[in-house]
Length: 194
DNA sequence: TGCCCGATTAACT
DNA sequence: GTTAATCGGGCAA
Image 1 (cartoon, protein in one colour):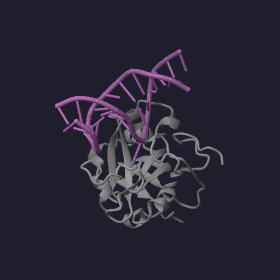
Image 2 (spheres, chains in turn green, yellow, brown):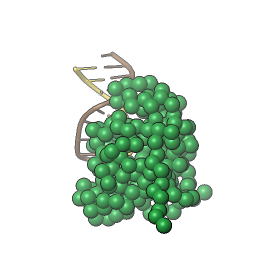
Image 3 (cartoon, rainbow, N blue to C red):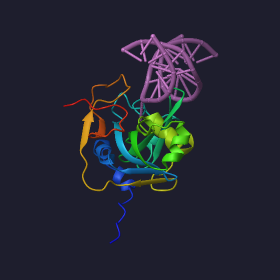
């Protein structure tokens, strides 16, 4: 009996409400050039949301957000880090999911080297850390998720997803659009009990 | 052109 | 708990 690999997540998966896609990404496997692991934490950003980069309309930076679903939007954070999003909803909706934490499963030595760090719990525990570990840069902005170097597979079986307020924002900070794998030790921050 | 500040992180006290 | 690092985007002028 051979295990059937879970299906690749393609444009169809992302062509839905960002609030449906975000929790469905928890437990999915994200690999970039063979390194990565299981997505354990994300945040949803909707174009009507003042905290979203797309809120004030299209610009050169956020152009990918206004394109079709299933593509990667990468931006520079605090002049230092890269952060990676998956574009959702029909083209023009300008909604995306920020990838905030991954449980490392593939290419761990490579990711450790890129991060210059031995503690596996901190390897991919934060949006900037994920991008450093997976070697994501602006070169990946606008690339399709269903083609190399990306490999994105649906989760297998059920997972327990928890929700909470988003991290590190000042606008619309009360919206509970952060999602995580319950009990995971690879989160960027714990979820408040409740 | 200038200015403010951010979807962060690591290193502090 | 606090804060420096570091710089591009967006907006005012």
